[in-house]
Image (cartoon, rainbow, N blue to C red; front, side, top):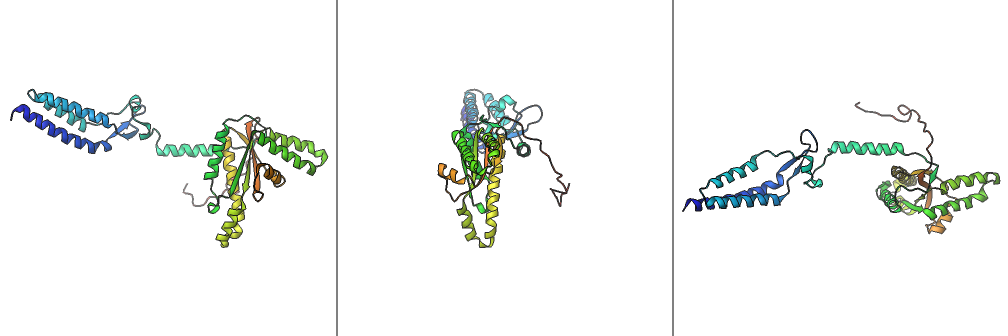
Length: 319
């Protein structure tokens, strides 16, 4: 057998073995991703099999060309391919890293992401305030408001997963109609010399963008009382806790989106009017009304009482 033929046969066998080896190694090759100056900050799987295939095709072409000569090209090709497998990966610059799908790497460590999330939640809680001066400017669309409320309904917890809270969102003209009904109901109940002031206050709520009505449905609560008679006397209180969590979650969420809001309690005098107009089951119990809109004024200064030793007690802390 001639030297050229032996070189060709050896090259083909090596090419097959190299292809099998690369197939096994490819899922495990890690490429450091360097976003800025300094050492690589993260790694990502090298999943570009097309590039690997191109390498193999180049090797095969050189092997074939080398078979027709003295074999020197074949040897240099073998050395080059070996160096590809054994050399250390070269850190990518930010421009090179853009070639790799972002879902395979992150520029933020899990620890940093956790601290950022915690900070954003705490900031949202701190920034939740009572805004009485509201207008009809909305920082987000009606569809986004509906999505926000739906997420609260889905994910705010409830006792024994009762999911007993019911929310009715009133926007635009329906929001205004609700507060007109409140005025109508309050008029015969309010002393004549006090009514103008009361109406002015209600019109302040009407000037906002929307209202969320928070209800509790009795059926899930009653079912739990029957299922767990040992705790039957607690489920009424736990139902109120459930509703309160929905109120607070939405209050924080709406203000995080740029709204101002305040919480009102014109129940039960408005329950029947609302039930008739918006086809709300009469057995649902209205617990509160969250009024929200654009911020037309600033909240009042908040006074804080002492926490540690009076409102907060910690035991077993290591720090």
